[in-house]
Image (cartoon, rainbow, N blue to C red; front, side, top):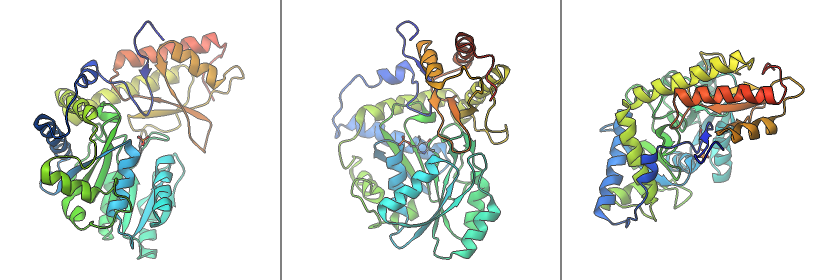
Length: 372
Ligand SMILES: *Cc1c(COP(=O)(O)O)cnc(C)c1O
């Protein structure tokens, strides 16, 4: 580690947070405290506003990591007799199918390679062939590769076939434009962590209120029942079970910083610049990104593993960590790879620092360049 500061987290999460966000947690609050109830309500309202969901949508928060929110979304909104078509091009799409396995929900999958978005023609064909399918699940940015899936286009196609869409926008919401007016869907799941730069510990689902009202009794799990969570919270402003109070205060502070940066547009601009600096710098060192620019979301970048015989990932990782930069292993099936994230409280200086550190480490490992 460089000096005594925490390392920069160039990962899919948990991520680097601001000092103010960390500081917002230095108190204790009771779950029935008026101040807490107010802050909780503000966080929920702001998230709906950010996605232009006012009037038709409500935000239902849930304790746990992002997967808890995705599982709650699927379990609450897909009726027990329904069937979910899961669009898969990475590990998070796979996880939704696995969630269905656990819950015993019927599902079908439409799988494309990790470097290829799902195609509307293929989705159309599956929906035409299987009238039992009631819902479709899509991962907005598939963090496994960093690929941007065309959410607007797919949402329109699903709506045209009269099916309901559920979106996992965990690693995109807050930094990639998402308007519930332009994207017809019943629910979007995301978390306090990732692009909002809050601390991990809670997820939330923006739900179409009419869909949530109709979802009573669907859930397979008490703690992940969004309908029940929503009814209780609408009733007295409180969470049903112990709320992650500190996480919510940190999230509230993180949302203030998000607004001060210019909201989704401002955050997007910083991440796009981070991503540009990273890709340009890594290419100059010989590394090859998996995705072409048109498929790359400014969230996390997958690089192919260098071919130089002196390159060894664990050593590379450790040396970068010693210099204060934490990267992430790849999880691809199509190619050996590793990932470097562009999200969290990081800017141009940190991205340039990371690229410089990669260059130094290559030299130290006697690796001529990063080409695969
Ligand atoms: C991070 C992430 C999740 C949730 O993962 P957790 O480890 O449970 O927080 C879900 N979907 C996507 C696309 C993600 O990037």
